[in-house]
Amino acid sequence: MSKTKIIDKILDGLTYLGLILITLSVLLPLTWIVLSSMQVGNSLYSSSFLPNSLTLDHYKTLFTKTDFPIWYMNTLKIATLNMILGVIITTLTAYTFSRYKFKGRKQAMIGMLVLQMFPSFLAMTAIYILITKMGLMDTHAGLLIVYIAGQIPYNSWLVKGYFDGIPKSLDEAARVDGAGHLTIFLKIIMPITKPIVVFVALTNFIGPWFDFIFPKLLLRSADKKTLAVGIFEWISSRANDNFTQFAAASILIAVPIAVLFMYLQKHIVAGLSAGATKG
Image (cartoon, rainbow, N blue to C red; front, side, top):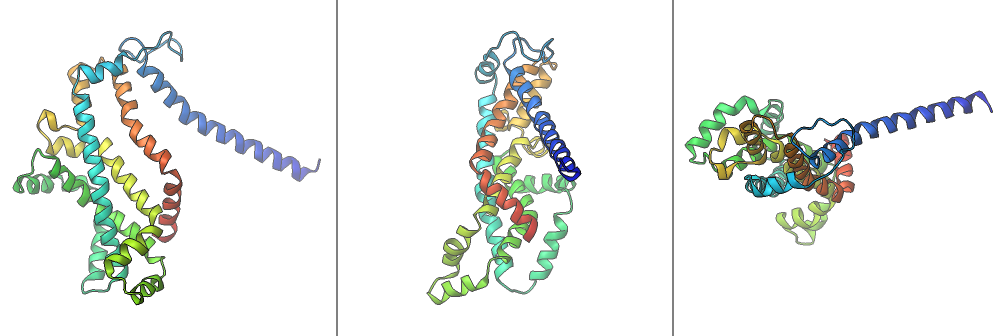
């Protein structure tokens, strides 16, 4: 065997070893948290990786003895509305900047570019005052406005980059056939921008599941809380003795996101690569 072939085989072996280590680093913590959610007792500590016995009592407790179902449905409702409304507003904004020339367009685009560089937490005081003045404190509508408005600058730039890559001759051909602006947007542009739209929809859906700061800032009533706030206050009130139930809650939170990821996997990869090359 030649020296070149030996080197190639060694490199291949190192590549596979690296891939196996990366896979284990992802799967082992995930497997551990799943097993911990079904472990008897309240502690995550165990003398072995595999618990001696498994139980679903922690999942039953979440649904029967806590407000977990209310928090879950609140978060699901906010995430779904944020996804739908965010996609509509973002695509319309991006399409406008990509296809039309109007006074102040360049300044508006620069303003959006600058805005996306600042974390939204910097505007917490202003957001609190604005939402209070609008009479939307302690409402899901107020939280939705914050989420939707916050994602517009970054996502609009991302989608605009994708729209810019679509030949304008398609618009002109449709216009010759009598299509209007809305028809071109809905029937010509949107079908061929599915990957980036799916990516934006997914990121908008995931955000509310993990956000703690803004729900804690804007929501007060017990029946309005989202999962992040509800679980944090529930764990705190029990003196940190419910780690296995916390693990069960974590698994349930991951379910809708994992299902959506698996269902939209093909479009997500295409959307990420498109955003990277055209954004």
